[in-house]
Length: 206
Image (tube, rainbow, N blue to C red; front, side):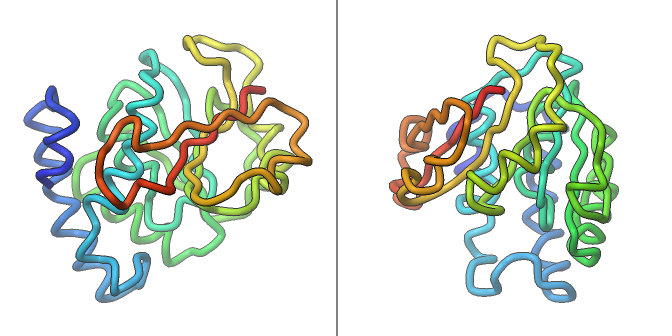
């Protein structure tokens, strides 16, 4: 939890409590349904919650902005971002029902009012959003065609609507087939933790 407070100084009491609750609820649920590697659950805050919140350093959305978290798994990056941006709306989708079950239960237990959930494939989601977010779901050249239909053409933020995803490693090969600009930022611009040395935010405006 200290790493969250280190980089986000203006959290409300409600946000601090919700982030603290994640540190209790995720390990409890992970014992029943494995949504985070059991070897990695001790690194929940830096490797999962703070990683998700790097998007909050990249983008400060206006109230009413909408997000689709494609392949959310146990709720990353959607749940941390929903805590950070209570005036925005988040829809979290995943094909694996037990993972959506965990994310739904955790959101309910911490009192999140700005999230909805869908157990299904991205092809079943036809709604449009300002931004699609994802965390290491699939190759960029496979992801972009799947979510293009979900990007609204009515923008309201300083950044053009599009895809914001969290990735690691070399992106050149999987960016070749993408017919939009691919802009990447090293997360070490925002957080100076060793875990983020190879991690990037990738922004694809559409």
